[in-house]
Image (cartoon, rainbow, N blue to C red; front, side, top):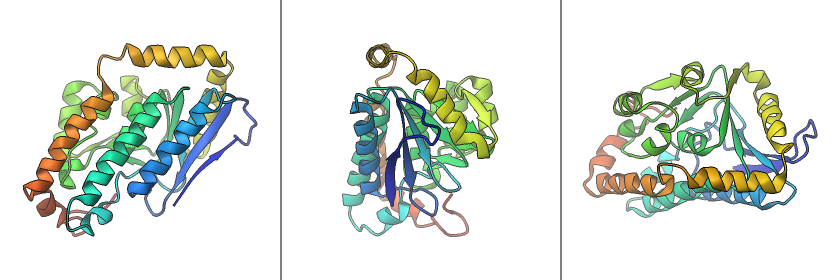
Length: 254
């Protein structure tokens, strides 16, 4: 697995691209979430950076956590680890000192919604779909972040059914800035990031802190509250029973 940070090929001043590449579906193990968190934080701390683009290689943006890592753990060590690691990665995106633009293609599921939902702006490919298959995977969580993308009743329906919504539907809700051909996704995300990065760097950092400060929901505390129920599902055996079907005909990886 690699998490890399690069300058845009276009040379957009003040922009950095943080890219996740973890085949086959960018479902991240515990260490992967920590690596992503550190890369985003480091980019935000760089005084030369005024906007970060969060991108992914492959056919999808992010398929959430590595369920197989959880299945290999007979206890709860992996679950505790991934709970903490996801919280760190989501917080790193949300609290990044500069704005973060998420470039989303293909599937954006589970933890992917956590990342995109914590970004400041989303540019999506035409093939992008967003959803929380948590109930099919023996978990709970990230409703906090889905609620930043869709209205409350739609969020609940999507959560209970594990259905997905398209980028075009999110565009109608105003949570996606632009939907573009997937081949143009990264360029379009960098274009938006470059426009943001033309603003004064110090003022951008103040603006990011101000906007986070007036958010009506404490996203970190809200998400950690959700995670407590994931842990309860594990302790009661419910999670194991549901995960037992993961990868079978009744439960497949995204």
